[in-house]
Image (cartoon, rainbow, N blue to C red; front, side):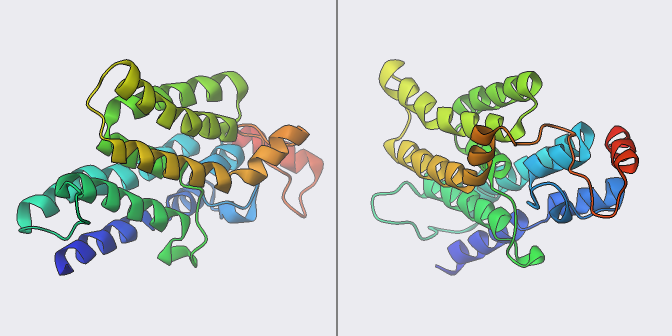
Length: 234
C-alpha cells in the first residue's frame, strides 16, 4: 500500500512541474498565464511565444507523462514486492496507467502553481505513449500535421485526443492486436476529460476567434506597433 502511494505521489509531483511558466520566463521573461488564454500549458505557449518555446514546453510536458508511466512504474514494479492494485488488474498495467494518470492530474492541478495548470493533452500524450506507443504515435503524427496546416494547436490537440481511443478500437477489433480492454476504457476516460478541458477552445474555434501559433494578444499598456514588434520577435 505504502509503495503504491509513494510512486503515485512522485508521479503527481513530476506532473506538477510548471513547464510553460518556466519556459515563458526563460524565453521572454513573461508569465504565460498573463497572456493569451491565460492557460499554463503547451497550447498557450505556442500561441504566446511561438514555435521554439512551444516545442520546448511540449517536450517537457510529454516527458512528465512518459517518465512516470514508463520508467517510474517499471522501477516500482521491480523494487516493490506486490504493489497494491485493484482486483483482477495486472499489477504492471495498473502501475503504468495509475502513474501516468497522476502525472496528468499534477499537470492540470500543479502543487507548484496554486493548482492552476494546463489542459493535459501533451502530458497525456507522453503517458499514453508509455502505455501503448503505436496508437499514440498515430495521434502525435496527426497533431503535427494539423498544427502545420492550420496553426491551431487547440484543434490539433482535440482531434488527436479524439482519434486516440478510436485507433485502439481499430487495432483490437479490426487488426486483432493484443490491446487490453482496460486500456481502451481508460483511453476513453482520459480523452473525454481532455476534450472537456478544451471546451473554451472549442467555442472560440466555432466563433472564429481562436488564436493561431505565434499570434499573441496585445498586452495591456502596449501600443499597436509595440505589440506587432513583440509578435515578430516571438
